[in-house]
Length: 277
Length: 277
DNA sequence: CCATCTTTGTGCACACGTTCACAAACGCAT
DNA sequence: ATGCGTTTGTGAACGTGTGCACAAAGATGG
Image 1 (spheres, each protein chain N blue to C red):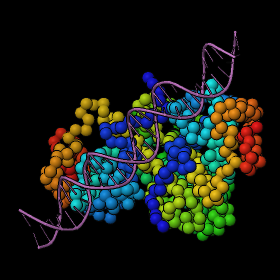
Image 2: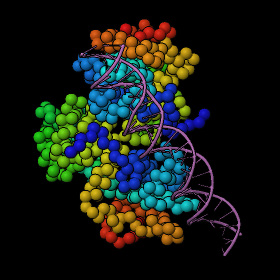
Image 3: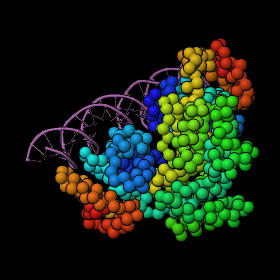
Image 4: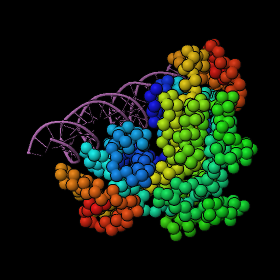
């Protein structure tokens, strides 16, 4: 059995992954329209509500079938049903949450959870001081009950909100118990067997991506940009770069991040320098 | 000023967006190696640790420059520094969190927050009963202090953990105050001016995507698949489909989701049917 | 029934992302 | 110095996703 770290699916029954990822967005917008008793909606209107462009939306829907009426638009209720069905939301999905810390608590209380076919089957934790307490009206049960719960309630989706160190271990146990889809909030790369889907939600990564763009915005206003920082040696061809690399290796081994950070401030001027040397 | 709902950036200084999204992953793996005092690492090893394939990793790094040494690998410390710098983590990013409910609390307590240059500048809430309490050692302050805090502490990143109804309003206010990057946890499509980045984290969407794949797995084992569900009318060309659509519109207007769900059970057999009729 | 107006569904071109596969570059031993 | 084994960096092929632009399909009014 091959083990794949991330397991990105290549096309599912012809529906592109990117489209699948947008269906929940459309569904949310459509549900709002439905609550306002709006009977039909055009691709343009719906696209605006979902924050995408209308051509993309139409193409997305075309993968599901021809559910619109030219000259009119889409029937809201019908589309809600079709998308729900396509996403598998016409059935109930029991979910276990493992790791009832701050985040686990927050998720247990999350309203949007139950709203669309997802039901919290159990809250689990390994810490005996947490077990027995309750969150969102549900008792926190011990990890050892995992296997019994998964089997008896036919749980196929697990949510991991443990500290990073425990995540892979918990993941293995979930998979062993029969869970085949995992939503991972721990900042850990999970390794799972083929056939198991993992999606990750990582606050820290999102912030870092924002920081990147933020820095870019800030660095563009002044004309200087990030000048001397990019050592000419690193772009130079041939033995020059090799020498630079050698110096880096020699110097780097004895240094830690803080030292390097401190150095950055010194090097922040124009002069080209072999970075950590 | 054009207003764009989502604002996907087209290339930043030559570094592809997909690469930027992976840099934090590499950084995390590298930091772990650094703590174990590993001096160098090959693309193969690092790729395994980050859960990607090695060719992708090498290409990603090639956008940053030539920081490896052929025949040896990459200097861990040096790479940590380069990626940190590229992501803008060598500086401090003050962040405000708006909406101190369950999730806001969880985020305030999240350790990985401060670890990499992100500092919680303030916790904000509009609810007077929450204001004045404290979370993670920080006092919860009133929304009205937002503008002063953003300006005095030079906050450029805001995190929204409010209920969905308040999100756009809070977003507008953040932007007005000078915030140019927003991490949105509310299940809402935010509209922002050009130049403002929004990233969203949506538990419900992630679960729905998992449900889709889960359903597909379940539907493939039996040979039948999803048989009669896909009405032949919907695939039929010409006036037949038009008639079906017309029926849907006529019927749909008076129905709600529950009714349709109930019908699904009845229609779950082989016979082709005009869905909600 | 015809003309006109609206909106879908999609072919096509292009941009972006991934993976392969290999030459060039480097360390090291002799 | 030279040769050998290793690993990077990247050109090129391929796959996926996006957006334009328009024909086809239907609604509507006369």
